[in-house]
Image (cartoon, rainbow, N blue to C red; front, side, top):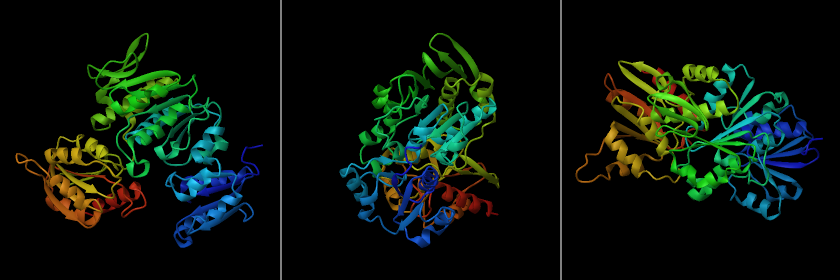
Length: 463
């Protein structure tokens, strides 16, 4: 009998994670209440997707989170958008009601070896690349979590001989807490830790602690993978219980992957071997060399053969909305990097191009620090078009130059559509128009994917 059988489970948030957990929980005999602050009219599509479940199995409380829900609650599940300091959650914790989420419930039941991947940047690309390597090896590989489909929706079909590759966000990891270790979490990687989501976590210490829960959840048989070049990860390095493996673009490592003489090398602590030339990586940017190195260590650690790893590198062209080439028009390359929701991500995208760049930046802030972004954009960009709630703030940052610096030229746009039209008028043959906002999409879109899709449509309509 499943541990949720007969339990009264309250789920906050009718997004894909909450919906997937609700369906699973009903299937194992839980009594589910799904609550969301949004009104019923906004959630009709999401509610309709669960319409096959009986009213005695699931109920919906929409438009509010009444505190009385806690009177009949054995466990509280949080979707990614629900912060731990929300009043409802605070009261639940005061009452001693245990917290959970879809990723935690999946981990408690997952029968297959799992690679868990988190980081401030690059986790989506790395997760997808490891998944591609698994497929090249002919191994049944499940890719999901914070990327794509919540894996708890596939739990019934996952077998012990399969491979699970799961992207995990700080929001998901925040409640893992480290009170239990999972033998199935065979390999766990923290790619980097740089400022991100500080509107949610408040401090870098809390943000890093959330990421560090990935290693707290491993037992001593696990393998922990980290970036030797990233100072932020060092803050949680001491949490590693098992074997530590590194990856680096800048130095040789004893156990892991590194670059030397324009070649990717693998080392297991005793011997090393060449894998393939760096030039076989199809992804642009130095940050994607690091992502590839991480994927190489993760894939090799789970036993995938070198040839499958090489084939994955040679054939993988990236994920949607991450340095995605949309089209070339009149000699101008249009690139969609909508997934860049922090200034460091946007700078990594900017550094991927030697061509003159017209940068589209903006969105909503996450209490981020923009001074370094402004300094580098002033040096690297040909022109900047700012849109969304961040536009005026970023314009101010870009104009705060020293007497010896000339600020980059700036245009302000009310919408992304207007920004694209301005970009076309400013661009010349040989330029790159790069959407790499640096801010979140929530000032105008439900997520970065919707923003990226809109950018694609706008660019395709240009003539």
